Image (cartoon, rainbow, N blue to C red; front, side, top):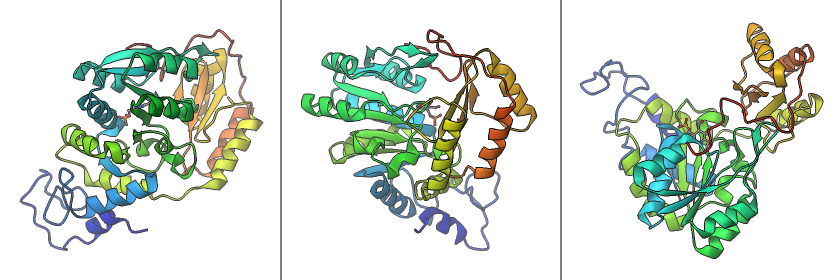
Length: 347
Ligand SMILES: Cc1ncc(COP(=O)(O)O)c(C=O)c1O
């Protein structure tokens, strides 16, 4: 598949004397919006072609590249919904801070969807609680998958939202790798975010926000407000690369086998290996780091290892042999939600 942005960067003239930003005055990949490099604000060239390809891949009417993280996508979705009249948004209690910040900034009232905590982990909101919250709200925002690899009940939520004529927004900051699957946010949501820098090989801050036909125009208006006017081309190129990155079924199978072998949390998502350590959590994390192995987080109950299609099987084997050496504590049924990355209820 053609990588439009990377090829444009590669085809730059050999002589490139920079009388433009950025101030480092070196050409290379970190250029600004020039005659040949298109414009993120009003794309008509390589960026438009890359975004159109991404929309096809992600099942969207329109997709918009973000160099400001999924945060900019969350703000854009909530703004678009608000402009269409959604003054009250149903939001699960443990959503990412960007959701609460966007609602505060835009004067959107939050209708909380309760989330229980079981064995130290927030359980995805149940259908009954979603339905109850949706009654008092104009739109629903769900996170799927979450940081621990659990899916929200997206099919039921879509049905409820369709029946009520209310938009469904999905924060898929942790689910970009699912676009090959029936569990991808794009199969359910009116607008959704794919955090390609987390579970696909994009540079940090690379993300995509997408919409179906009904919401495409409003989302286009929203991203004009929340995206930078100085996008990083290395990030843009990496977003296109990540969206077009092939599936790696070997590492998906290796992850599931690893989870069974090590008694990991039984979650829905192969990119998130969650290992219970209980009271041994911090010591286990320190031990692994001393051996050059860095988890995504230690929340006081669990160590979480974040995989992507670029994870190598040898690396998983190395982790496997180190885990064999480590004592494991229990995480009790009533254990409270851990520290990072739990986003405190009702921030
Ligand atoms: C569920 C969720 N949504 C949104 C975000 C924001 O993503 P970003 O850091 O790319 O802006 C995060 C970041 O960790 C997240 O976990």
